[in-house]
Amino acid sequence: MNLYELKKVKKRYGSLLALDIPSLTLAEGNFYVVYGPNGAGKTTLLNLLAFLDKASEGEVLFHNSQPDIKDVTMVMQNPYLFKTTALGNVSRGLVFRSINKNKIEKMVMPVMKQLGIWEMRNREARSLSGGEKRRVAIARAMVLDTKALILDEPISHLDNIHVNLIENAISDMAGNTKKTIIMTTHDLSKAHKLTSNVIYLLNGKITDKPLWNMFRVNLTTPEKVPPVVRDGAPNGVKKAGVGQGVEIYVATDRTGSALTAIDPKDIIVSRQVIHSSALNNLRGRIVSINEINGLVDLVVDTKVFFHAFITRKSFSDLHLSVGEEIFLTFKASAVEVF
Amino acid sequence: MEYIFDSLKKAFVLIGTLDNELLRISWTSIWITGTSVTLATLFSLPAAVIIATKRFKGKGALVTTLNTLMALPTVVVGLLVYAFLYRRGLLGNFSLLYTPYAMIIGQVILASPIITALTVSALEGADERIEGTALTLGATKFQALMSLSGEVRPAITAAVIAGFGRIFAEVGVSMMLGGNIRNYTRNITTAIAFETARGQFSLALALGMILLLFAFTVNILLQWHLKSQSYYGTK
Image (tube, rainbow over the protein chains, first blue to last red):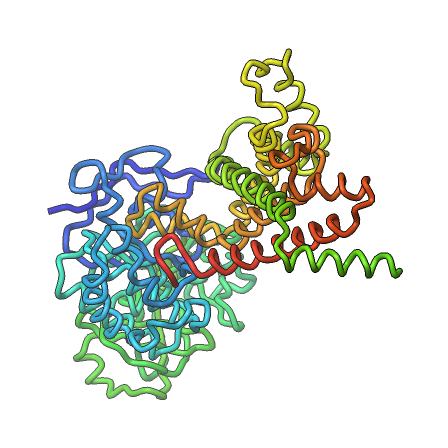
């Protein structure tokens, strides 16, 4: 059953169209991660889903009807803690619901313990560290019996210990309750680690193209055309610096500023340089190996970081490990330009 | 110099012996100011919340007017209220002039712009996330506004104290609307002016000391009470 249904939703701020979603449904009990670069419209979308803001056009239906704000709770990117204790903060939503004081303590204790903040329950919120404050804000939302829990960048700017604590708590909640959880993140690997329901948002629009290996680039016409281009003579090949002096070729007619993305599945990994029609050959070192949706995600440092997905068989055949030097090869046409 | 010390000594004796006249005058000040500040607060706080949280036409002009009214001279308020309350005035039939009620009306008019303007300023300067956070936790609009007010409690306390200070120490309204009638409308400030004019420095000094002591005590008690309490219980 659908919890949310968005129909022809547009959100404008003055003349700026911040969000344009023709159709989106979010099922009850599922865990969604919204991924997109800064300014993609993630927070705008979350504010609409939390009913903190209204769409300029279109409808946001909740259970096919009008929403009740008590059914949804949201943890903001930079959450505000009330000027009281950690316990007072975590209890606040339950106090709003007029729940008995003795019952409140029984309800908040397990969540606060899970997030490692029970011991600091009597400390003033203002005396807590950034990570502790974030956990208090998350606990405050988790204790509420809402149908949807919305988290805006809950793990950004936190150390690994706090990230793991929060991720585990969210995963537990996603696995053990019927809550629909919607969160945003900047870390695409984390997004895929947490759920298979990743929504890609770019320039206020949902895209089905995976937004991996994203770079903001300046597309220019190369002075020297690479030999393969000269031989094959395709038009519209541009050069783009992706940072640290690393340049890639992009098959596009566009010039100037643009966002580019490369699907990690389109990158060929090899131990030696491959001579082929593919224009992009980068040498790098493996810095991390993860598993994502049954594939092996290699994070490769080529001065800038690239993700490349290979099958377990290829990974095993190539005998790859962290620190090893490899080559990444991909076609100029594999680079999506936005 | 000796005269001042002599007057001071007599003033301490009056306070130490709980002089009847002194107590009567002090009580008049306390109950009239207490009633005035309570009424002004009951009116001003909701008004401030509405002004601070709603968007409406003329809001800027209203805030500017309130800020200007903070400096309203007490005699001007006295004069305006007098014009309404005197026998041939609009409210002359109620025979309120030279009664404590006339003093309360004048003092409420004096304190309200101060409490309202300072509270508006506190609420507008509050963290923008407070109301939204409360709403995401399922607060009703009223609960969200109470949360917002609760978060700026010390600033609201300061606004109420400023309003109290303004009317507890004023003479113009009390004199013009109360008439300084003995055992009825004579309060600390009108009595100080009256006794000084009569050359009774010791009583005037004793009243002055009580005025300071009372203002100090009220300040401490209000700060202590409001800082330790919140809408959602003690901290």
